[in-house]
Image 1 (cartoon, rainbow, N blue to C red):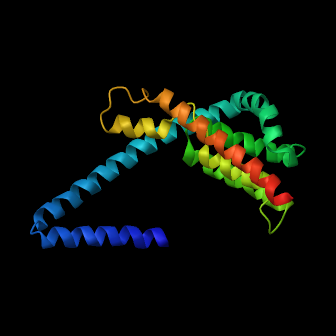
Image 2 (image 1 turned 90 degrees about the vertical axis):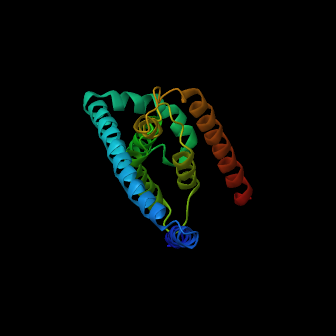
Length: 192
């Protein structure tokens, strides 16, 4: 609700400033161009999302998702020791992390919600350490292939949309590392 008020206020203020400056036709033209660009961008992102969601489904049906889940298992068991014995919860967390690794934030969301539901069922009414860790890892998410950003760059005419990979890898690794460290520190501080 707050973001709706902020965005609506920004749009109304921009229109009023444009009209007050005597640039009504330019404001109207910018609104039309912006709407057209938004539709084009949404279709471009939807196409990339469909492609990578399909890749995830092929990985799942071919067994590659299970292999990735087994590869991630030791790390995830250390990050989520409270859930390590629950296979279904660990599978949900692993699928969420896998989707995030591929930069599929929109595809990762339902997987993350399923994992969060499973973790929340173990401690109703209280956000457990495992649930907080999931939120941190899901929010910061290490991305090996930033598909959404690359699709936006490609839609805007970038010749090499994946040339940002080293920066993305560094930034996402740092954000996840700091997030995990903070989560571990706060879980110890508040427990004592």
